[in-house]
Image (cartoon, rainbow, N blue to C red; front, side):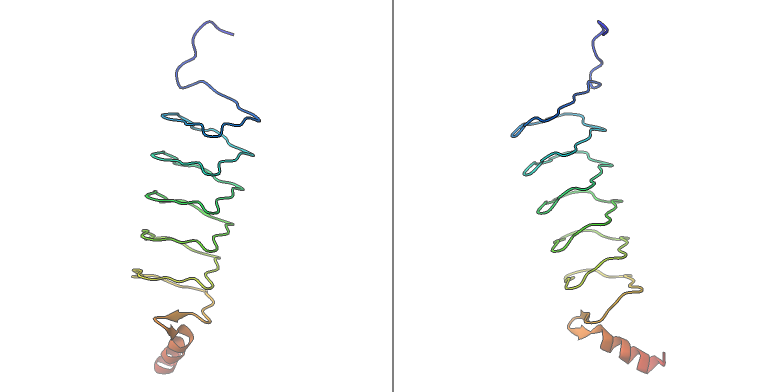
Length: 143
């Protein structure tokens, strides 16, 4: 052990098997911190820079995100059934290998949206079955 004081911001704290319910962490740098086998139910993150935050094997059911920047985020192997997304900019988003069965898209700007290799049976646009629209297109354009 050295007599020299530790450099501020370089201290490492290891907490194991502790209950810190109701604790407050303000102006704390947790860069490269690791939380595992932990309970954060009801926790609030406010005015936090979590760039590069990784969630793996995490239960986020009932989580609320408001005024967040998720640009460049990647979501895979996720159960998002019943998710509600409102007032979001998803320009340039890529959705693949997803199930949107029973989903509703309303009040949306779909300019330039492309749907490829999708099962469209039962899908409607403004109440009109897409199967009927595609059949009419084939009839009138000979394809």
